Length: 336
Image (cartoon, helix red, strand yellow):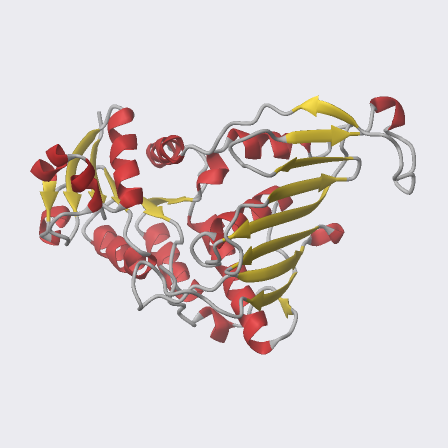
């Protein structure tokens, strides 16, 4: 049983509190400056371990600290914990509000041999693993295109999940980015201090691979996603529902790609519905492991650089190449 401290007890913090206990570990303390945070509202017994004094966290000597605040506090809290001797941290996404502060945190963590996990949950999804396994499968060929069609906006908050998914499946950063922001962004429900517009981004990767993320503030529904391979496609309209997998038969596999009228056959795709607590459990296991990190600061920084590139492109109305200029890495965005 590992002693853990949770910092931030909102909705995602409450899920992590459940994941910690579900994993059989000791949820030793919850820090939240609110008098009655969401997690305590949901489970009154958690009030017994709730503190509003951050010094209690610093002196707790926990083995793992889980940071579930908004992004504006992530790096500051993580830095304080590392300086006080913490060795294993989990940070909710997005990692930071600027690429530069994320880089500074990564350097500090490496200097102090600290393992940091960033909760980009789809890196722990069985669906993602299956999509990666299909890349190069004889039935499908190479993954060529990803199209994400979502409502609700928020490139910095929700959108970083999709950016990270594209980077993960395409096995690296895009080389060019073009972004357009929504015409109107609603007031963020977390407070007026945040501004996180949605929009549309086109990302081009090596070898002609590409992704389109359409995350409009003017769309109030989930439309779905398509993962297009040379000779097949996986798609869904409800992520927790049926995933459709269509591909050429093996007998047609070697026919030219220009013969795009070749009939496709359907094969069952064993999908699993998104489970945020399950992903949190996987992040905890990642934090406690000494094996190669699945979802860490390096991957989260790639995501943040793409996000900053989208905002840079949208601001200047041009195609942006990566890496972005150092001055762009310094810009802090008011994302929650």
